[in-house]
Structure formats: structure tokens, C-alpha cells
Length: 97
Image (tube, rainbow, N blue to C red; front, side, top):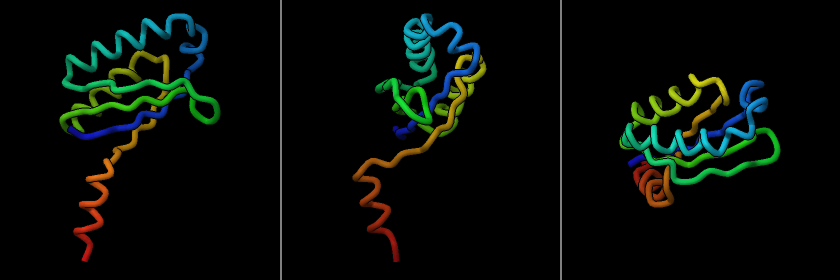
């Protein structure tokens, strides 16, 4: 399973309906699970992004599908980062010539 970090910003629609956010988060968790993606954690944040999520997916295509389905609802815009665990990081460094 790969790890992905989602950086979210509320759209005008999302902030106008902010009180619906907890329910949307629950729905996203369920929808992600149906795609084989686990939403591991959610953080409301200050600064450039309104929220950060950490998810695990079996592959990049599943992660992309989850992110695109979320964005298609129009409540958030997303930026997604592929993350490497510490063990994966060490493996990458060990493989360097």
C-alpha cells in the first residue's frame, strides 16, 4: 500500500456549506473504502491549506480515483503528494550508486 498526503482547500461552495463537512468526511471515508483506499487521518489546519488528509491506496490509480471523486463534488480543491515511509526512504537511499 502506498501512502498519499492530500492538501485541501475549501472552495466557495465548500465553505458556504461548512456545517456539512463532517458528513462529507464520513461519506468520503466510505467512498474511499469502496475503492480500496483507506483514509487514515484528517486534520483541520491553519495556513495555506484548510485540511490535510493521509490515505493509503494499493496503487496510484486508486489514489487518483479517490482524489478525483472528491474534487468532482466541488467542495474542495486538492493537491496530492505521494509519500514514502521512513523504511522506503532508507531503501531509496541505500539503492543510490
